[in-house]
Length: 138
Image 1 (tube, one colour):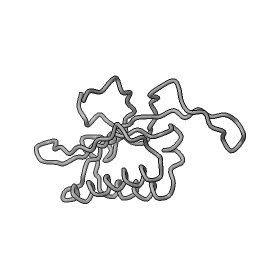
Image 2 (tube, one colour):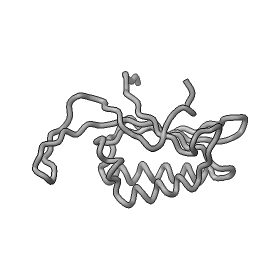
Image 3 (cartoon, one colour):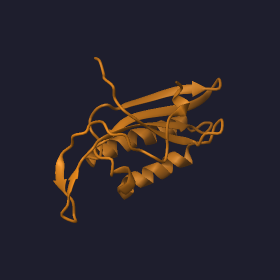
């Protein structure tokens, strides 16, 4: 399984059947259901350092706004096709509804990400894959 098969415009995998009950604006009960995603960003030539900084800012702001859970969170850098850099971020949104209703600060970061990536091998420059955590070890 390659990282390149990972992810962009759809982000929804449920980590658990349970969630935290909350009351939505319309008065109906809503259960928060976290979703873990793998975001693969194929950096344009010469843009990998700037892209890494944007990805770091994405996590910082999403965390500060309480949009994500603390773990898992990973940021990885790799190369494909010899020397073409890519970055992978693994994160868990606090609720599946967050990406569809992302605040302007997050949407601005997504615009920066899209500006710094390029399509590769028939895949978009930014891919998002929904995943389920089977387990983790320390």
